[in-house]
Amino acid sequence: MAVREAEPVGSLQEVKEAGLDREDLLGIYRHMLITRAIEERGHILYRQGKIPGSFYTGRGNEAAAVGVATAMGPNDVGTPLHRDMGVHITRGVEPWRIIAQYMGREGGPTRGRDGNVHMAAPELGLHPMVSHLPAMLPVAVGMALAFKIRGDRRVALGWFGEGSAARGDAHESMNMAGVRQLPVVFICDNNQWAYSTPTYLGYPIEHVADRAAAYGFDGVVVDGTDVLAVYREAKAAIEKARQGGGPTLIECLTLRMEGHAVHDDAFYVPKEMFEQWAAQDPIERFRTWLRSNADMTDDEEDQITSVVKRLLNDALERAEESPLPDPSGLEQGVYASAEDLDTPHHK
Image 1: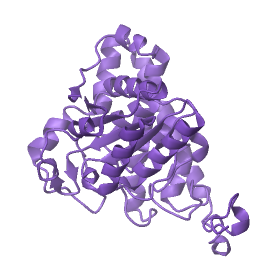
Image 2 (image 1 turned 180 degrees about the horizontal axis):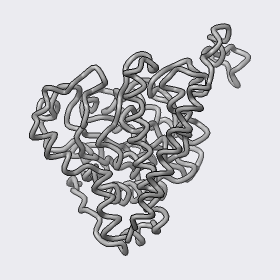
Image 3 (image 1 turned 60 degrees about the vertical axis):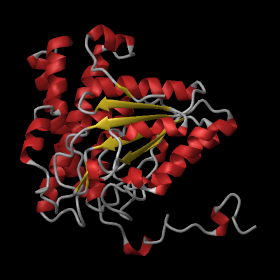
Image 4 (image 1 turned 90 degrees about the vertical axis):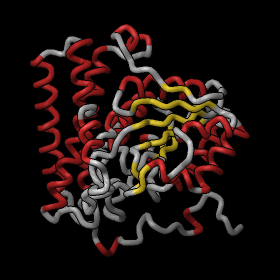
């Protein structure tokens, strides 16, 4: 099972064969713009002192996140991480709730009990991260095991970074998924820097996806700045898993275009590397593709841009109107009593 390097998507006909129509394409573009706009607005809020703690973004990862999320079925589940804002947007999390989450307000998904991107919406098939290390991969595999036991035609997706691939829980998760041929797709966000550690100091192989063969399933490397190629590969892997074909490891190759977090100026990344990947900006790349292949007009582009701008302005206003959590409710929804459990673990 040699790793396969995915080809870029070419014509509009190829896209249609993958299940996307023109409205879908414009929707993908809108989701990518919203994703970046939220994180750009977050930078401003952080500098204004309105976001406590630190602030992480996925600039450069919009295509990888939106492409995978677009390929998910309505009943599929996933565990997106801190570079995967586009997954939340595509699955339907309202932007104002994300901004409220950053600001620690009641309107955020965690209702002010956690900050930053430790959030999700289980009703939308998204389960909250406890760490950007691969702690969520066992969770995704556990959900996939439940689907297989129940005979559900559902798929779980687990995200992780190339740096965290060195941890034991990543190995254990993929090993179990391979042994049991579970309906799970592993998504590696390879942005080439595990904080300040480059990939060549992180693993001795060319691609993280090369490891898939050792676990008995397919590995694919895809250009993470090509949203349509990401979608095509994710769609194929998800449907293969749904049909009982077992796991796939998809490695989305990108570059983290900002530091690890707002406190990090990424001085260790060569300037030439930033310049090279800036020329492959995923949003500009898809915009150019839409112009050339889907006849996106000036009016359509202006309308999408205006809608996104209004959406973000309204989101900020609504988030700021959301109250801070009442300290008297600090423990609500945090601890479960025995009465809260369907089957208490101590009985």
